[in-house]
Length: 345
Image (tube, rainbow, N blue to C red):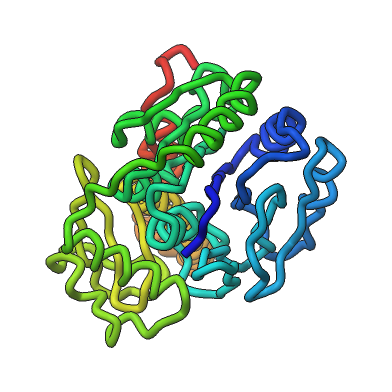
């Protein structure tokens, strides 16, 4: 059992700058371990620990798997690995992606809720879509505290706004007040931690999801018990998605372990529409070129009527092509960030 608080932080777009500003506010004797997930590309090495170490008084590292947790140290998820809390250590895994990300914020938050319970403070910073909302909900159910950057203060407001809409957040603050707030909350938590309100069913669901992120076999670990099957399929593997209800939010998880929110699925659908629409555009354009070629061939053979019919058909197909091209260009309006924009933008 961890006998000191954990501060778990999630960020995406705009997160590096936000994390630097937050780390600059924390004192050298900060009495909690800090674990950070920043969405990043798996293709490049991360310099984030060096950046955060230089930003403030606390040292930041990419931990090794099984490294013990200590107060006053910042543990940063390395590229292409989930960062989890396991007993009194960290775990690095390559479990299934969540919302098409690894590392993802939710697995870290859930594992902290499972292991540290009421000694956990979850923090959601700037970012797109809604990673972190589900994990923050788990932290609250386990008796921990939820802190969210004020969306008006965030470079990208979607992640904070999503958390505020779905979770009973304890504190919404601008970034320049967050360091002082976290220091106060950690000190208060040392004196009087909260109480868990998690039901046995929620506890079991949390164990299953943390287990899957820890690379346990999803089917044998009970992924199909998380909820009824939906009519939707996994965009990564094509498997059936189970439908999970969590407070006011619906989530999805497939039998191989990939997990999504409705928002992240909608984002994928819009990308898929664009991709498939351009495939149709290419096919239609090829049909136009072939019709024109055949028209010319008929003309050279003295069949003027046949040539004209082929040219007319080519014009009809070309008109259809423009409609599909418009669909491809407009598919981005399905994304939640675009739906939130004022019409003038």
